[in-house]
Image: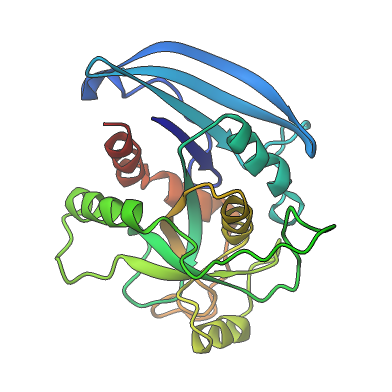
Length: 259
């Protein structure tokens, strides 16, 4: 098993801490830069011993940048990132996303999975700009893995069997947060959570026939949805802090896929 993990606001980095307590030993840990036709990508690579079986974990921070200040969402080199995962020969990509919640059942702090996305940005994301290739995205995420992750997330968060665990991700262009009017329109069109990155990764992974899932952390209510204060401004520092406070369920998903 070679598991690719893409982190963002919700999972800034991945170290070797925490594996030993789950019976996993780190045999090798390397940081490397992979050259792709679309640009260089830094990868954090670990060789793990899981009950006597060797597994590989490849971590990529989607906001990586040469400046070290983080690449803004509308400038991320998704083509290089996904190609680097393909070149690393991963069996599956687990993407970690911080999102704004629209659905009333996706209260901040809850972690769930994406089962669909809506991209009305008008920005083309494809590896096939010079040839006619049409890729089916009826099921944009690996359904079998999603089912497994839902079981893990229910257990880890002590959620009732009737609790919704799958939501539709609306892709916003960014880097600005949405207006209240935009969020209201997004909800009418079927969006249940909103973010600025993930569907572009999912599209490219699908074109490469690379299994892909998205674990989504509800880090805040979307604009206008804060109970009792519909005019509350969104603050990226607060959003990031909330997302990183809820990494326990995310790590449980990663461990479950490695075992």
